Length: 173
Picture 1: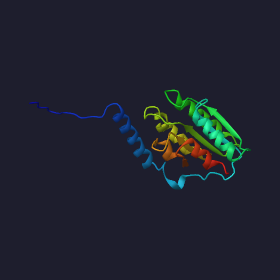
Picture 2 (picture 1 turned 30 degrees about the vertical axis):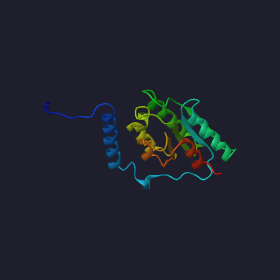
Picture 3 (picture 1 turned 180 degrees about the vertical axis):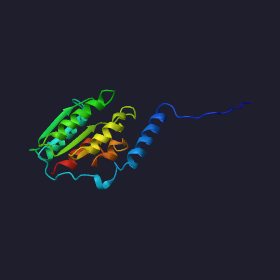
Picture 4 (picture 1 turned 30 degrees about the horizontal axis):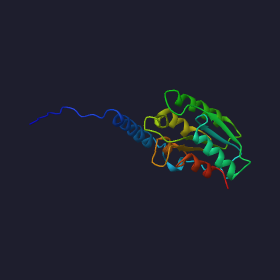
């Protein structure tokens, strides 16, 4: 026979991460950062497309190849940054600010392939979400695969299911 007296139950590991993300989601939602009325339209024929992604990854290859196949004259401004780990958010923020200030960039895509919740954590960062919300250039979130939903998806002007989907949404065929 076994008897237990529980005095505290708390999430640890992945449960704690998910709880933190959920608290931030509720805060940003309450502030109106997910409001559909704030979403900027993607231009039909962008002069330039900014792409923030990891160096030589499948996400970059997918966006570039699909965009060029649909519209060979597309002009891509690519900024390679870390897409996971502690240096990812500051690097993505710098790239976002640089592309947002470029008058020739009409839409910015932030792309990364799939991964674990921990790998995708930078894309649920509060500072990044606020920077995307305050950007003047429309931003497309193309993070992970269909089931992945970082907070960036809710803040961005358009959520693409995959990097390939993002290229199809921003470049006419």
